[in-house]
Amino acid sequence: MKPSPHPSSGPGRPAPAPGLPALPGRRGFLGGLLATAAAAAAGPALAPPAHAAAGPAPAPAPRATRPLLLGTYTSEAGGGTGIGTAAYDTTTGAITPGPVITGVDNPSYLALHPSGSTVYAVAEQDPGAVTAVRLTPDGTYEVLGSRPTGGSGTTHLSVHPSGRWLLSADYGSGSVAVHPIAEDGSLGERTDLVTHSSPPPGPGQGGPHAHQIVTAPDGGHVLAVDLGTDTVYTYALDESAGTLTEVSRAALAPGSGPRHLAFHPDGRSAYLACELDNTLVVCAYDPATGALTPGPGQSTGTGSGTSYPAQPVVTGDGAYVYLANRGPNSLTRYAVEDEGAALRLLDTVPVGGDWPRQLALSPDGSLLFAANQRSSTVTVFGVGPDGSLTAVGDPFPAPVAVCVLPLP
Image (cartoon, rainbow, N blue to C red; front, side, top):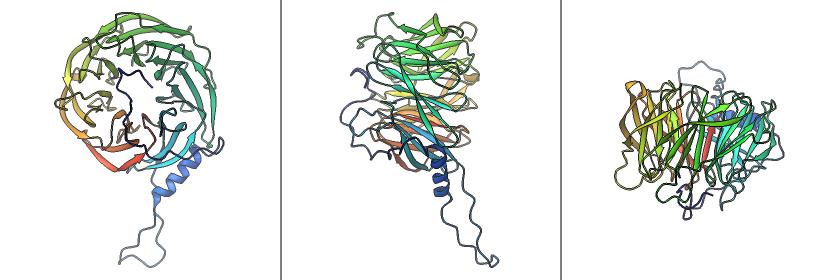
């Protein structure tokens, strides 16, 4: 768990829903999960209309289902026992539970390799670590092993687009690390570790708190968002040595608490959630230099009180941005204007759970998933042509849901 200044978790949450069933060995993960979900999605055959010809009614074709992975805290009361698996109906959004990938501690954030064959999980603990898990189409999984990050409280990770490097951010120590990825998806020894030693921590912060690390769409720069220093650091990644060299810094308002950013598809704008001053900041990005230039903070549309915005996501066409607000348990929708350089607040909708920690769009953009930490649920929304969100189905029980990752 994170230090107390960071409101990602804490006591007083309702008792979580029962956990997902334990995985028997290392079999039956993707293949069995999708087969079960497909059968459930098909449902019973419908009676033919009165004017239909006599004879047996044809069975309805099963709806398409895709896998869903769920991150949790295994160290918390009522938490999970590893990486949860499920499948979702691509038409209705209905989620079917699956087994658990065990042998992974505190997998509070997950990232998929570009090949789709390996998933990586943080171990949000002290000391921090990252773990690789191989997924195969025949329904097996294998934990390939963990590597220490060199920091503490590892809270975020991402895979470089080349598929050769894993990037991770340590909240507790305010550091970022790089690990090489072998051809089989396993991780090598860390090649770099950078601790954010300046500027000094912002108001109310005891030190740096790296909360996210991502590669910019240009592929040449890596950005690390640090909540403790109110700074976004841009690094150049040496793709031969796996080392980071700082090339730029973006200073946010003191005490704003930048947490997570998401890029516009054109790679020239990014949207940064600041969890302590209730804003979403539109930033200009220069692919040539890696410089991020923050603009004025935008309202979350949630009224008075602290909204603790957690994470923005951008639709694939770059037309809309969604923001999770943990304080009021809502989702804010923005229209993207001026070729990505401006946002217009449209509306907010209830998330249907408590403390939405993380959001994810389905690969086709038709569904939005919200992981609600304190209610131990995942809620699902249909995405309309105008970007509107409509809740679909009942909340899906998932123990201390802090990350949801729909697979292609």
